[in-house]
Structures are given as C-alpha cells and as structure tokens.
Image (cartoon, rainbow over all chains, first blue to last red; front, side, top):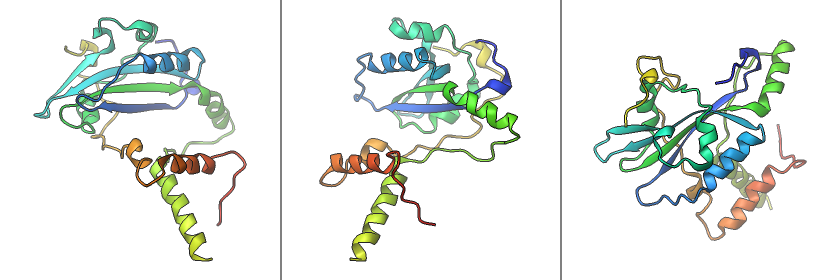
Length: 152
Length: 54
C-alpha cells in the first residue's frame, strides 16, 4: 500500500457482486474494466476477496492471490492493502444467497480526493453521503409522470 | 483456502451485517419496454435537465 495522507484520502466504497450458482460468465471483461479504472487514476483498489456461500450458509473466503491465473488483475493484487478483517467476511456474506459466489471490492475514489481535501481546507465537514438506488430514480420519474398525466 | 493471518484478530471495517440490495437488473426489466425505461432514467440524470420543485 502506498503511503497516503489521511487528509488526501478519497472516499472509500465497497461493493459485493454476487454470482448466483450457474449464472457466472467470466470472460475477463470485468478485470479489463477494473484495470482501466485503476490505470486512469479514477480509483485505487484497496482490497479484494472472493466469497463462496454454501447451501448450509457457511462461508469460505479466498484471497485474490489464491486464483491461479490472475491475468491483468496481477498488477492490482500486488498493490492490495488487506483492509478487510476476518470479522468483515460474515458481515459481507450476509447479503449473499446460499449457493452463490461473490466478489468483494474495496476501493478509494481517487477522483474525489482533491475535491474532498479542498472542502476540508475550506472548513467543511462531511455530514452525510450515500448512493441513490436506480429503483428510487425510476419510482420518482414514474410518480412525476403519473402526476402529470393525472392532471390532464 | 484460509485468509491471510494478517486479517485475523483485527477490528472489522464493515461493522454490521450487510443487507442485500435490490438487484438493479430486475428493476429495469419489468414492463413492456425495459429499453424505454432505461432511457427515461438516463434522461433524468442528463446534465441540464432540471426537475426539482420545492
């Protein structure tokens, strides 16, 4: 992990991408896109885990380095910081269905770091953040449309 | 395969069981025209489009 001042650290996010049993179709496309985001300086990958949840609910975690042929992910694996603790595995796997496999990705939003630093230097402090689900946007648009058509 | 020893005994960063979110692919596929629905969402977040009424 490269040394990063906390003042210059961008927001850190995570996702858990589940692949239901029999539904995965790995072509290398995801790896290519991820490496592209890293190479462009958009994000820095902090940690990656691969989780497998058995039908009985038990969870097995695998390091990225345990994958035999990493291909383009090799350069990312070399820079991982292992932020996640063993205790995090159960918390993250709670979102998974039994019988599925999931990739856990932790990353720093490098693109946001300069703005966040500027906000802090200006005396600002983050009091809320979050993500707006696409479903909420759809619901809002549909409500607007219904209100408009109802008024005709 | 086991996790690296460095991950054991540390305080976690997630802190609580993660709830499953709604699967986005399912949210944009119902209805007669999923492509049209996706286009509507895209239009809603298009720069310059303002729809706020407060």
